[in-house]
Image: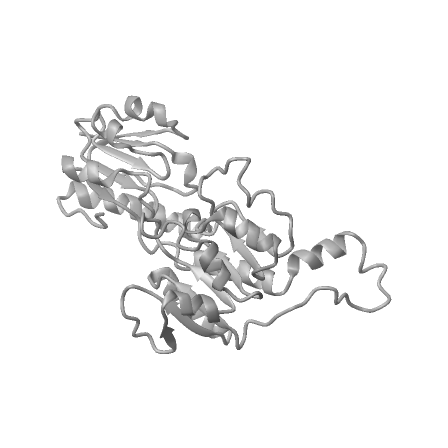
Amino acid sequence: MHRIVFLDRDSLIADVRKPAFAHAWEDHAATAEQDVVKRLRGAAVAVTNKVPLRASAIAQLPELEMVAIAATGSDNVDLAACRARGIVVSNIRNYSTVSVPEHCFALLLALRRNLRAYIADVEAGQWERSTRFCLLDHPIGDLAGSRLGIVGYGALGKQVAHLARAFGMEVCASSRSPITDPGVRQLELDELLRTASVISLHLPLTEQTRHLIGARELGLMRRDALLINTARGGLVDEAALAEALREGRIGGAGFDVLSKEPPLPDNPLLRLRSPNFILTPHVAWASGGAMQRLADMLIDNIEAWEAGQPRNVL
C-alpha cells in the first residue's frame, strides 16, 4: 500500500478525491522545510505545492518514488536529484488558462483606465465636491488599437492573445519557438519592449529567464508602457522596476507575483504606493474552477503513475 503525504494541503481550496488504488493518505495544512524529511519518511508519494524538496531531503527518503507537484512551477523541487534517483516528478499543466489570462486583463484594464486613482478620489469625497458631473483628473486609455507584447507563447500566452484580439489589440509575441498563429506577429524581445504599449510575461522561471526584465530592458520600454507579470516574480528585477516606476520611466505595472513569497518586508515593490502600480498576492491562478481542475489533475497524475503510465513528467 502506497503512503501519500500532501505537505501543504491548505494551499489548495478544492475537493481532492482520493486515488482509486490502495493507499494511506496524510494531509498537512502546511510544512516547514525543516519538517519535510520527518513527514515524508516512509512515503512513496510526496504532494507539494510550494514546500521545497531539496537534494539533501531527497537523499534521506529512500522509499520516495513520486513527487506530485500541485502547481505548474517546479523550481521548489530539485529535479536533478529526483532524476538521479529515478523518482517521477509530475506537475499540473494548462489548468488556469481561463483564470490567469482574466486576471492579467483585470490588472491591465485597471491600470489603463486609472481605476485606483479614481476609486481613491471617490473615497476622498472629491466627486461630491466636484462642480462637474464627472471627474477627469487622471488620463484614461483604451486597449483597442494598442500593441500587446507577450513574452512566452505557451498555453497562457495564447489565451492572453485570444482575449487581446477580442479587445481590438494588435498582438505581438516573443518566443523561442516559431509562432504560426494568424494575427500574432513574432518579434525579438528588444523590439517587443521598444514598441509595445503593454508587455505581459508568461514564462517559467529558470536560470536563463531570471531577471529577464532588468534595468536595461525597462529602459527600452515606452514611457507610457505597462508591464504585467502573472508568471513568476524572479523574471523581473524588482529593485529596477521600483526605480523605473518612481522615476516615471514606464507607465505602470501590475504584478501578481514576487521573487519570494510570502514577501520579505524590505521588498521594494511592497513599499510602492502609487496608482500606476497594482500588486495582488499570487491569486491569478486561484479561481474556484481553476483550483478544482488542478485538484482533479493532481490525482490523475498520481493514478497514472501507479498504473505505470506516468504523465506530465518533468
